[in-house]
Amino acid sequence: MLRWLLLSYPRDYRRKRGAEILETVHDMAPTSRGPRVAANLLRHGLRARLGRPASRTVGVWASIFTVACGLFAASFGIWLTWLGSRPLDHNELAAAVGQLYPDKQVSHIDKDDPPAVFIIYGSPLSWNSVSDLLLGDGGEYSLAGLGASFEQLPADSRPLVLAGLRQRLQAAGWTYTEPVYSNAYDCIPDDPRCDPVSIPSDITVSAQRGDNVLDIHINADNTTPVMDFAMTRSTPWSAYPVSVIAFVLGTLSGWCLFGWASRRTEEGHPLAQGLAKFLYGFAMFLWWAPILLSAPQMLSHHLSEPHLRWHPLWEWLGQPTMSLPFLLGCLMLTFALGLAALPYRQPADQTLAHD
Image (tube, rainbow, N blue to C red):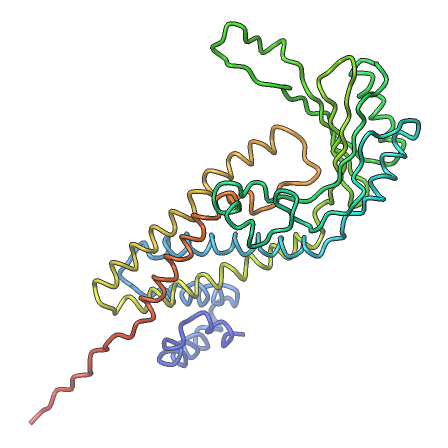
């Protein structure tokens, strides 16, 4: 077990001091606790990977990088699990709507399955949509869905339409959320004609049955309510364990990569050190600025209304809306790693000759 924990130390460090560390641990074993010794070995080994023993902040800079690596790795793992989810079936949507309103004829219903799990402007992601993805329209990359709508329902009041919808959902075995009310339109606050109280509200109810999620939208027209349906899939169960495993692997890989670059640049030319630090700092700004902007907004959004399916992790990280800064940060980190990989001249050992 202890020999495996020595893998947390850099290879050169293990070769020089590995036997000494194991001998010291075995001598202390009768008077020390195994878990505590193991934790100390792991902690000191991870710190030794960073080099720069005189630095007090290198651990902080390494943590900033490794946490970001873990988050991006977790989001990529979740994205892969989504690709393996069950495809949407337009027949399921038709059956669900027909079960809820067997006495009504839909005015529109999608009759083709989506071309992919995630789409941008109705099409799968391809080289033709890279410009849209990178230049401000990355938010259009979203989970594909199927839609249906009624142009006109019975001229009941919206509370009666909502009450009837909830009864039908319950009878059909759907689990539904509380309705969410949102303004049908916005007006200029400083305009004297703007009366927020008089703005009609749209109603949205989300329901789930199995791995199907159904979002029902009722418009703000009190005389002829229009109801829209949007069917999507729920988050695959495998996304949760995969995200945890990917986060752990991402953080460990990021720590080892940062430690390697840190040790390499520690003995390098001062100019290379300064340039590598600048590239790293600017890259972390490009990585973390979207996260710090998007995560609070996403948290506020989830707390303000119920969600049967949370937004995917990459949206919390500002992706792919801000994918261009992320890619620029990756490019700068590549240059910084290239500087770390440059060979440097090690000082020759000097021996003192005694006459």
